[in-house]
Image (cartoon, rainbow, N blue to C red):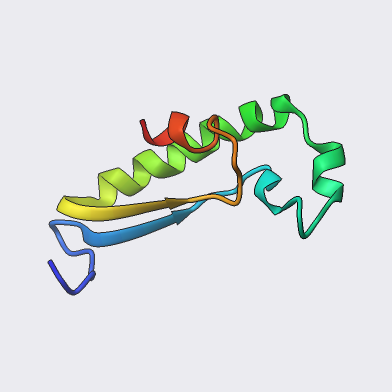
Length: 82
């Protein structure tokens, strides 16, 4: 632990900055709002879940995983980390 080297015991910290629909950026990018639809989140969800699960598999016991999106949608956030 501590060094983050990812030795035999895994990494002590992992950041998963996953691809997302970007609906949390509508203030800066209003065009996102106009093209957003629920199906976009449903298409992203399996990949987001796969990335988060892989991160967990590489994490040492007691390690810290940070899951990050620029989405406000619970399908892309809470439904992945729950």
